[in-house]
Length: 183
Image 1 (cartoon, rainbow, N blue to C red):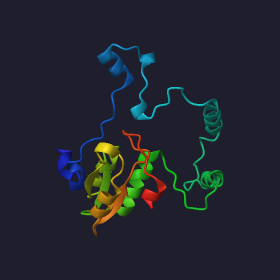
Image 2 (cartoon, helix red, strand yellow):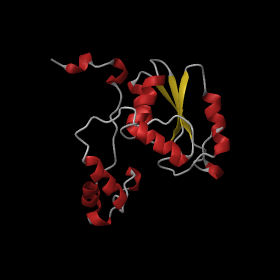
Image 3 (cartoon, helix red, strand yellow):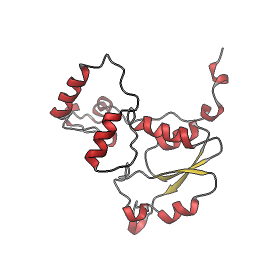
Image 4 (cartoon, rainbow, N blue to C red):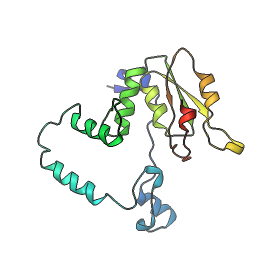
């Protein structure tokens, strides 16, 4: 039996996320020693984890047999205090999880999302998975190379637009959107 016929239509034609090559693949292709490769595009820290993070992980392992607070109240409170904000904070199992929750909440079949491109390809994949239509809004070219085209983004909003993805600082360009542009 072919399982493909049971797959939701909204994801049947969604391309898989393709991450960058592994360090080993890069070393093999280019003849570079593994120790001389840093994968910045994958947000890998070439310095490794901080000693404080390792210590915190070791401490957390002591209670890893217990089911965690699903709302992560202590973490949210600590983050609010650290950042000196009173807003809602959402935590998840990594940014992919948080992004998926956002798309799952807001995007229904036929809705659209605007995506400033080039950027992280997962935004488009998620929108398609939940039946939405991603619209790519190119970053500016020329003098203002790769800056966000706020006017094009705003002019592209329509009644079915549910989300606007603006990655700041953007991956792969590194450009950020200013607070005034965002407002």
